[in-house]
Length: 250
Image (cartoon, rainbow, N blue to C red; front, side, top):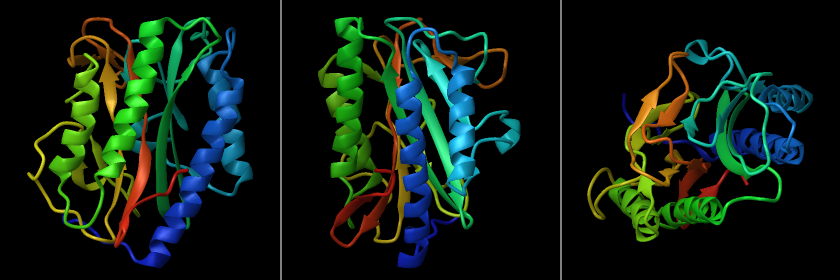
């Protein structure tokens, strides 16, 4: 599948979808507290997506049952919201959300601390993962390469002693949730496909305190760190413009 360049009109549709995703994630953030369940977050998000006139991107995608992915602590990505999963003081929850407007997708993720008593190492994990996303976005410009993005993310993460998940990567996005190219969060500067204006990609570092290895649970979706260490996930949908990066999910 070839890379599809987007017109300015298509990017504006993706911007509208991205604004929905941003608003939903900010609303979910307000509901993350000790005692809440991940299904509570799901219900809040599903209602708001509908209110905003969008469709959820994830629900039904390859059979996924929910509008959010909610991944707690050592869960890396693709956690399924559940009334049994009660958030506790000191937890972190990665919330990934996608929305569709007029046939175009927006996709973003944040990792949110639960309560006030977050371990210092976990606070550092959140700071570093978010900083690595910003570094990856800063590398986006026409003529740069996918390797430039991955190298920028990897440098930030590894300089703080954390590790980048390699089994899952970012992706192109547009009228499909996942398009070419794949966007790894590791790599070598100057290597890989060159970026062109009109490309739209989802950059999404997944960062572990321990080793990068992950495994998928019996539910067929939830990916967890193999060593049980904490994991964080931040993501933005980003358009490549003539002047650099335009974040569509802010």
